[in-house]
Length: 334
Ligand code: NAD
Ligand code: DAU
Image (cartoon, rainbow, N blue to C red):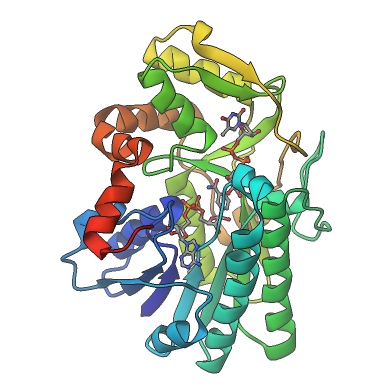
């Protein structure tokens, strides 16, 4: 089967492309990515010569461009998005464009070419925050940040295309991911890379905000299962019920790196900061037989090790070297 993956040069997308091609020797992938600041072709350098993989640079909001690729494939797995909550608070423009309008463009193309599957990668943030208990798939959406509101908007569009046109679309809502190739603006890679450089570790507010952390390869396996076995029109939560307070995560990273707690610096809180995300993964576990395979502590250690051994990768990003390299490759500034 030939699949169009959007946003495959980002963190989860690049892990997924590699995972999927390994798992399915007869599958081929076209990876379409705009290469925003978050997209990095270095993430998939090992696949450049793979005849089952093709990278095409482009924007999912460009309907003619998307159409030209959609006609070549039988399915779309849609990761491309603006993803960082703090950036959405500074400016929501690109979030609305890519996350809402870009998803609409893909849905139209998928409908036109009667694709067999449209898997929309969404997030647990669309449910909003709750102090106790766990959200189930049928709970109402109550997003709070411009990022999560744009993702909720895209979820509603996807389900409308299933209900109105019968598009075989499925929505996934995963909790916080971590692992190799995560852009060092997100909590775990930011803390690891700052600690490695003995820089201050910014902790928002009181540090007692709770997230459910899932290793990225567990997420990839869940998407693979949903792609093959999931029921069109359904939503699947993907989470490990591995709740941790932010400050606990920071302490664990410092322990692994043997760095002092004095690096921690409490800073101003994020506006509208969601206290706790928590989803119930019972549906995917009982209906599709998925369960997380990686323990949080062990995969956190492996992730820290990855950042220790891939200093060139993240130092280029953090120093802006990657931006210069991008200009050299594509001849235009980012
Ligand atoms: P990321 O920011 O690392 O990567 C996003 C990718 O999308 C980048 O390669 C970027 O260049 C590309 N992109 C952005 N705008 C584009 C456009 N207009 N056209 C084409 N490509 C474009 O994101 P991520 O953390 O890998 O997240 C991937 C998906 O998973 C997102 O939809 C996100 O909402 C969802 N998600 C992320 C997490 C998480 O913890 N990171 C958890 C749950 C769900
Ligand atoms: O829940 C899934 C979501 O997880 C995804 O949909 C988003 O794309 C992804 O960015 C992530 O959102 P969060 O806002 O939860 O992740 P982030 O890494 O930005 O922050 C995690 C927690 O850590 C949050 O409570 C804010 C806090 N934080 C974050 C940063 C970057 C800090 O205390 N200090 C920081 O420097």
